[in-house]
Amino acid sequence: MTEPVILKHSFVIACVALLQIVVPPLAVVASLYALLLVFGMTADGSIQMLAGLSALLTLMLSSRRSNNTNAPIFSGSLPLAIGVICRWAVVLAILLAVGYSAKVTEQYSRRLVLTWAMATTPLLVLLALILDRTMWSLLCDPSNARKTVFVGMNETSQALSTQLMSRMEYCMNVVGFFDDRSTDRLNVGDLNLRWLGKLQDLAAYVNTNGVHVIFISLPMRHLQRVRDLLDELRDTTASIYYLPDIFVFDLIQSRTGEIAGVPVVALCETPFYGYRGVIKRMTDIVISAGLLLLGSPILLVIAFLVGTSSKGPIIFRQRRYGLDGREFVVYKFRTMIVTEDGKTIAQATRDDRRVTPIGGFLRRHSLDELPQLINVLQGRMSLVGPRPHAIAHNEEYRKVISGYMIRHKVLPGITGLAQINGCRGETARLEEMQARVQLDLEYLRHWSPILDLKILALTALQFVRHEKAY
Image (cartoon, rainbow, N blue to C red):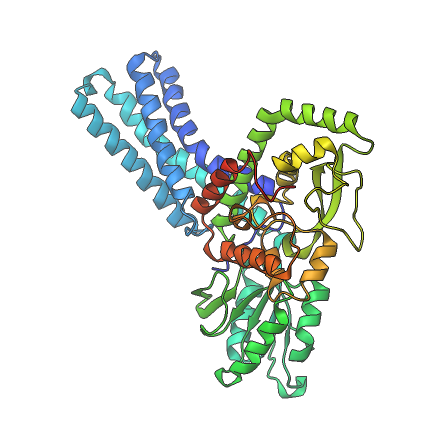
């Protein structure tokens, strides 16, 4: 539950995850053909069939493991090696069963097959360990560590902080603790921790210092104080854990678990921890790159029409809030005669005179959003997630909608659960934005790869025209 969250190297990490899927079948085929050269044999039809079937089975087993979003991203060298050996044994058993059923075993050299089966085993284990170590190095890079603070100093919080500081695989940088007691009353021990302030100072510190994770370790008798703290922290994007368990709050990705033997409950956490984040990023890269490649002629035609139909830049750039509330620049085809990006931005309305003729067509069919595929490849957006709002609108709504900033615990998306449920376009009333935020939070609570695919499919069905796109 507190596995590494991708903060840096997302493109490389996704590529390594892709290699973990495709390298095993390639290694199986390569080792077979290498042995053919060693034994001076030719690759006839039976060998080609063996290579193809073994590669397919190996790929299926590798993909099944990688698509398990609950699988730990690090499992240790010994469990990893055992898993590789077991999957290869399953492949060999299936091949043997198929060979006997089809009565084709006599077509293969026993020396070749036995040598191939035995030589491929250490090769697969070695490659798996190398890729796993590469993934570990990328995720455990100090720049990928999440800044962490504790609320309440006691035996539980001290024990957990000691484990987090000594084990890199948790990717957490513990910077200190908050407690209403003075330092001379606290039993800090030998921990290299700083007292950062009282509980009333927590929210301001989190906002100004970019804290990613908060562990609340207060006694059960302080339940109301915990509630108050959560209310104060709803305007942040920090992940929040309570020690020990409690289930009386509005939870985001809540789940129980333990860290270094200490029981914890996630009260508010990103859905994209561990392999979930890797799968999400890998999907974004593959689909967005494919769409950009296939849609490049359409993008060029739209760029020409925008550039020749009205004065102004072809690509409209605007600052918006992204992951953890950090600013980024979103790309869209310009659809208006203005390019607003200030403290006050007027939302587009029906029959808006600022919209150009070609811009109206692009907005009706959502074609103006296509350049955001570049934002996806950059790692600043995702294909699916809460839609990013202009900074001016963010600052307006975060003050009046409880939990508004929680939607920034994930990358903003080109489309999302709110959009396929009709919450798009102008939000003339506060209730309309509240409905959009609630659907964004529902997405965070119930994310799965299947939900993303469902949202993308429904978005494609709405692509031709949407009544609120203007």
